[in-house]
Image 1 (cartoon, helix red, strand yellow):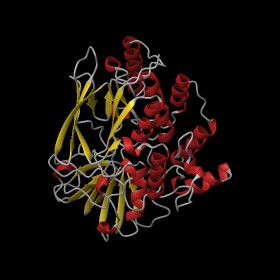
Image 2: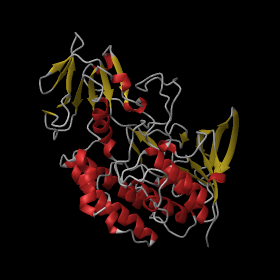
Image 3: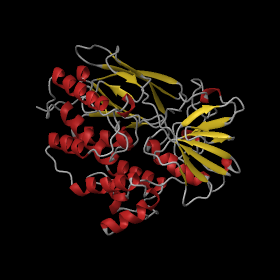
Image 4: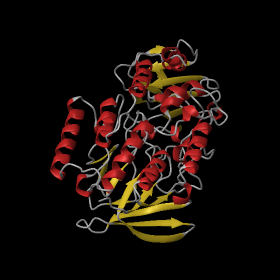
Length: 427
């Protein structure tokens, strides 16, 4: 018999919205907590930036948004959709195949309105504590603050959907970089290119943000020098930009302030720009050490969702990176909602822990650090596995499209992805 539980959802971005919908569909009592005045999470553009541009000062005013003004999706509309509510079937003023962030936010607002999710959300409410009350019964105290007023409530279950793009992870382990006296900033605080005008910039990173932002700031900067620790990066000058160079990782910061790369070149830069991603950050979660955060790994988590000792009452949605985000979070949310309703059973705690140990072992055997625990490039097997738990079929074309996007990026065709995608899929 289905069970109805009182469930707290932390966050009202993509993950929080789809989690709320699936929980509501299973007749659970849902309260979604959102620190902002509006839904959308990472898709809400905020022109403000933090006073500490590297995000190291624990006492700084934290700006949740990481969007820059010109950002467009790096996946096509077809892959920015839910199974029964598709961006590809709608338009909100930006019909491009790879639309701007405003289009995605309007889509999420439309989604929330259509499924009557907005009334489930407590806006301007910061969750300050989620604490396990009793490990035998498994209940959680959720403490929140709205307009300076604290509230403490007890929930049967908590679904954590607070995102992973708001706590900067600067590259401070490079030799001497933390002592460099000139300007440094993290991409979290980037909005527009103007502050880089006429500057010599070192960009650390080789992910999508590093590539996008290097090209954008190159329109105003004097020189842009990209630095990557990847052994597969080719040291070269850009063929499309006369003022962009690709280097190996930083070797050292010299006493005179110049920066030397492992490829031997030294430059006198004005700014070090960290496009190095984010930490997993759940400061409100208190589980007596059952769930831990190590670098970018939250765990132990069965299939990136359930901590075995507290499953299914505590869960996480949206941890996988470089993935088919919309499809994955929808499958995860359905799985959580049906498991809480006792329509789907999880393996035993010991079985889940063995699966986690095997997954972590595979990461180590492949030579990757813990930071890659939730890193998906091609996650077709994961989607197939989760959808199988739900008895649902996911269209194979979505995985094919995503694989092609990744193939283009890896093969060095990043700048031509949009055109190549159109030709490949006849769009």
